[in-house]
Length: 215
Ligand code: ATP
Image (cartoon, rainbow, N blue to C red; front, side):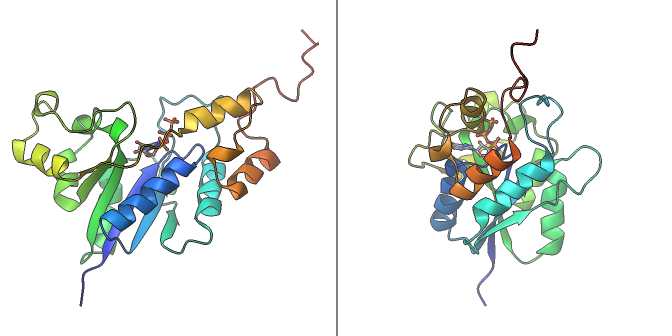
């Protein structure tokens, strides 16, 4: 019996875009995963509320984007948790639920500078293989000199799974910025996500809908 190989791909997904979809599919093929769980993150407290979507809307858009691809599995595990959400808790939950599977935790290259400071990183890298995909403008390897305190074998383990991906220039920030300015954004997200954003009026400038002539 061959082992199950599962990808865990977390994001704020505010909103999910074609770059995210490309990452999920690229890693699935490159690492030969059975499926990839798309894990909608509870909003980190430092991301302000204005101009952002709530968790329910963000997760709904993940579901819409995954529709029609049974290998993408939307997961609201982190949203159902109260209190601060740590990656290590998510990883432990998957480990418990899938004790026999090989788990691959997917991050983009912009995470390279942040990962060394993640809570309980050593436990995370014991429980899963972290897979990093390159992102334009971000470092393409973990630099031992900038991973202060991380054991060299951990840095080595992280670097072994840095995958060079055909560059994707989408970002959620860019999608939100375009919508706030009334610019086209439909080429950056799946059609069902674009329709949902329009229907719900997400990411429009705070003044939209208000008569701007009133001081
Ligand atoms: P924001 O612009 O709001 O920071 P984002 O586009 O980075 O959002 P997230 O939901 O924060 O989207 O990203 C989830 C994961 O996907 C992160 O690990 C991030 O590094 C990765 N990611 C997102 N877009 C890309 C991209 N274009 N190329 C590579 N990795 C990406």
